[in-house]
Length: 485
Image 1 (cartoon, one colour):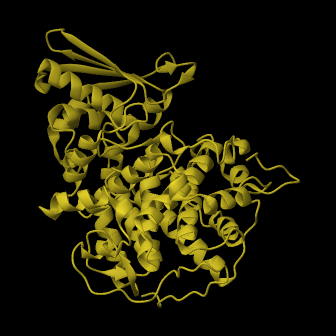
Image 2 (cartoon, helix red, strand yellow; image 1 turned 45 degrees about the vertical axis):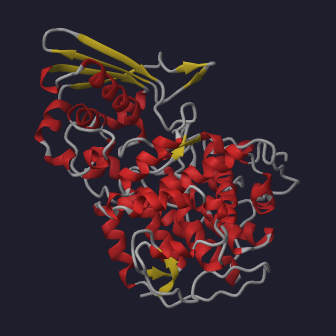
Image 3 (tube, helix red, strand yellow; image 1 turned 90 degrees about the horizontal axis):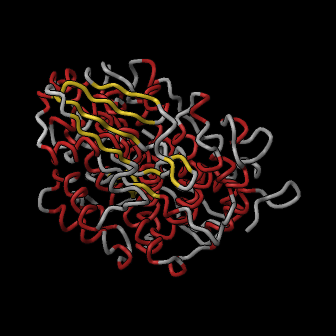
């Protein structure tokens, strides 16, 4: 498909046609595998999200939501689709364990799409293959919207995943609800007015949990956009590229051609990136380097005199936080996260939990970390890798160890192996005990499932009611929802 012109169909129309036209059977095996990895990783992250403050707050928030057919992973309570999507989005993102795109584009597919897929599938009885097809369609749209922003919305103070997420979420919800292309186009038009999220939490020193809210709202907005379209609301077809549309309103610079470039012939899904650690993505390469240097040279953190980390300008500009005021800023802080990796097990999500604030040895070692901006590293084939870093550790006797790191296991260049994905999943789901193994195995074969109502058994709960988003092959859908508590 060609990019939309002023005289031709809009980007939203082309994306809607594409999303509803693709089927599981036409996807290459590698694309299906990535969508499945995204699903497994997000469900694991959601279950771990019960352990942290943001996830607990989200569950309290939906505790009086109207009953419905949708289970939230790790709970017995079932609620309406929008409430389940909200709680799920927050839970997946609650501990910074969820997936994104590399190169970065301000998108979080696991948090913004998977909760929507689970909610919509449990309403309509969708199969595992239906869910995977909807996830691929959602990822393809979400990643194109993100790429078109050229990651420039944050220069205006917006937290990009809260802006891009509703578009991908609406695609997933609409595809699983069986709407037609015209209704999905209207839902995308509505999603643009349901976008939101400010970055002030990263500078204010307080209010950090609002970052988690952005992904819950993104997932919820996809459900709401489709419900509103079903109820008769409309939105502009030029919501993405129009004069007062998404790209112009939110972005410093943008590339509207990226919205539909290669649509139907080129997949964006292979740019999916699964995180390895429970911290911000910019900390991953120096944390991985520190982890490797520590293991290779048996480094005693008490003997470290200094740590120098060279990286992209935003590393020092936005992530040189020596005294974080809250948990979110601690996970944003490269010095804090690198110090934690040198003192504890970086593969354990709890390493980047409450101890980032409570462990005095982490804070003390972080004071010895210096971040240096450079534009001379990380180039490959003429392209700049914004995650590339060089980490240099100097001991008290002058011995120096150095490691340049362009990626980490989970990046598109070095995807997680099946064993690594399983290992991460089991670390995230220890609260399930022995049931975690069985859950992983079943999710890993989800294409063979005829429906997903068995997810209600995490833990066992009562039968679902009939409220929520209704699945139908007709574009003239009625909407049945319980009253909100």
